[in-house]
Image 1 (cartoon, rainbow, N blue to C red):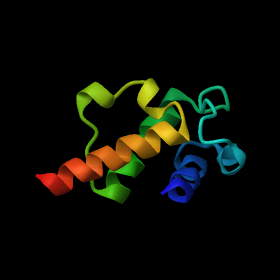
Image 2 (cartoon, rainbow, N blue to C red; image 1 turned 60 degrees about the horizontal axis):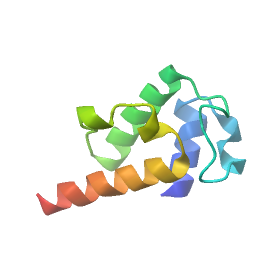
Image 3 (cartoon, helix red, strand yellow; image 1 turned 90 degrees about the vertical axis):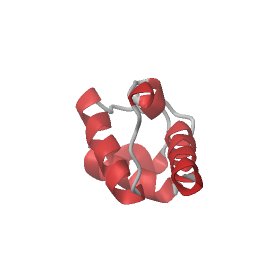
Image 4 (spheres, rainbow, N blue to C red; image 1 turned 90 degrees about the horizontal axis):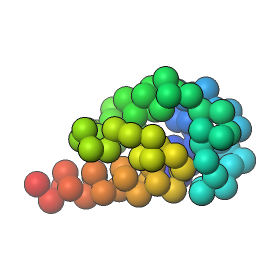
Length: 82
């Protein structure tokens, strides 16, 4: 999943440097914009067939690759449990 997230960051969040970033690196400090995070969220929802609830629509939820992966995994697990 990390590879997919990195590819999506490059494609949808205009962050080509994502491939070389540490999983805990701050994506906003690396150049991701708020608009890019929204584009990324929409791509994640489409790719993983999940929906981000309102309480996760914040800067922290998209701040690092590790947090994004953890959040998507939780959303997928919640969907499968339902």
